[in-house]
Length: 353
Ligand code: SF4
Image 1 (cartoon, rainbow, N blue to C red):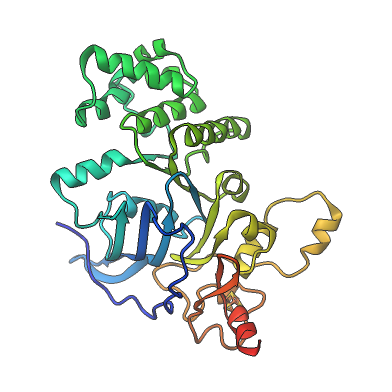
Image 2 (cartoon, rainbow, N blue to C red):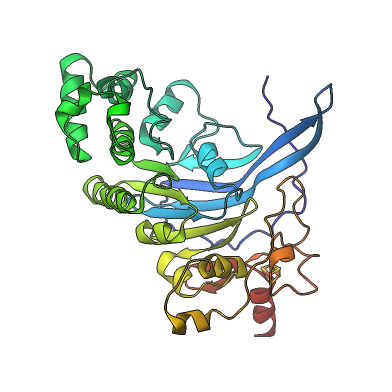
């Protein structure tokens, strides 16, 4: 039985201005007001005792050939957003359009065609490969499922894909345990490339890898983007990683996007206290930069998404919170060119400007 429910979303974040779009006039992926609340069941009868508000009114766009980085702490809703966009789970409400097609309404052939165009790379490269399957079968499966190649043509194509990601064609006869973590992730990427997608959703795709291997995989992803015009929705908790690959960034906190904008702008001029806290958490060894950080740091644990704080969800941890913050949900306010932050501090400046 489906556990999907329509629930009260609580106070909605005030709608952003119509110009609140960063991907240009023809976005490849368009996500509008996406919501996912999971029921929490308890007792012998498994009655619904509440809801985990994993994603709460998320909107963004990704243009073809560009990378949107989705960043935030564990529990911010990033991975749930990835699974919603790729239809691995069904949202409570909201809309997802891919190249103009309604993803959530798609069924049958149309959904299969969409799945060919949107692929995913997961965090655990070994978890996404069947240990009993040789690489030929793992990468060849989507080729067969989508009617792209079979038999010798499939083996030939698998060899090409392996070489594209920096492995050898002969590796197709090996099993997952014969590869390192970085090599296994290259196989995951080759599998994602098999259907010649327009977009790849990378869900913490380098988080499980050593730093030096991370860099190799990130460089591979960038090269593939240049060669094939791929768009990425790149999800990670590591800001340095996100900064390296992203054109634009959305910062998520407790299921909501609190800041968005061009990556360089967000990193150079973070305007939301949460983004500032995330940046402050990156170690620096430069005393001048360290001095510049004396603006307060977010305190305490992330609240539970089953009972998020009222008003601004960040207010219990925010060093700059003031009386308005627990009472009112902040709206997305423009803070620069294509740069937005959901914080009353910026509304207040606007109001007094
Ligand atoms: Fe902090 Fe208030 Fe801004 Fe929220 S709205 S980030 S609590 S200052």
